[in-house]
Image (cartoon, rainbow, N blue to C red; front, side):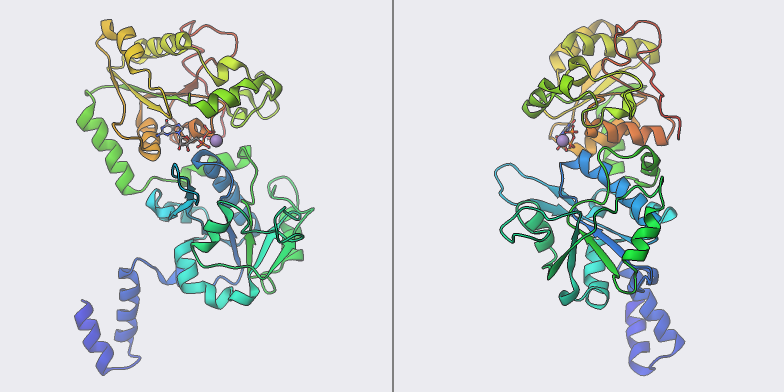
Length: 405
Ligand code: GDP
Ligand code: MN
């Protein structure tokens, strides 16, 4: 195909055939013409500079809703990751984990790699690179956004050789495009003609994700490689039949976070079960760091309820394999985990389980919960509803407070 094109290009200039070949070559390179033409409505760029994957995913959904509200193309940033012992963050291209195409069913998006390679020189030349922040951020550069000060800020923009020539404080504008006319105000203050690119020092979104943006998770789909690996694990390493997926968030950082939970009744992702205004109670220690007893009782009760043959455990620290194994021995239920830590594969497998039990406070759990809600699959949380004993009636096994899906 390409060699035929080469001949055609050589001998005939600007024929429809050569244009077709050029188009084909672009397609083969994984791009579509739509990506390469400049969006006259402008772009939104940001650094997912806060937290790890769970936080970044919450922010992503908010940024997607915001970009739609402003009618600007969203530039899909890489995921920011931290490796133990390394002083600089690592930037993992967005599509290493997710498919870009399903997002386009909701709104215009382009990966940051494609944007920087093909469009930045035209729409965002180096001398026009201004960083946006609500107000001045601390840093040696004194009064500006200092968008590259510290980790991951510096390493993130450096990945694309981006330097900023100035700062713009957008306050008091905000990101809640669902409940105000703020989108109009953004357009008025920053027209796409004068400001083709709004580059934010942090995500233009709130944490945790706003209820209105939660349902956007349905457009966030694991890429084929991750989906295949998840299916392969389930098929190859687990017995055939229904299985329960559980998330145990119990590392040292979590122990510390949970110590203060009573002073922050809606800590981290807690609104996913307690409601955004604590309609369903205030966070408890048990909700944040469930006891072994709660975990065993809950798992037993759900195993019984869905007649599970296996349990898949995802954890950042203690998978409790022995405890769960002996508790479920009589029922001949096997317990599984990934041999090597892989957070994204863990999440993809949790997403495929027949029932998921997560930690209400954890934004990592929140990812699996949202994905499942989007597909109508059942989930519940440890120690929720509050003040119930696992296994009492049906309430602890089902929690479907979110009805927007
Ligand atoms: P949160 O702190 O629980 O709200 O979620 P974050 O995603 O912000 O940070 C927790 C991080 O710990 C994750 O991004 C993972 O890197 C790691 N982690 C937490 N739970 C698991 C798990 O079940 N499996 C693996 N492999 N890693 C996890
Ligand atoms: Mn976190």
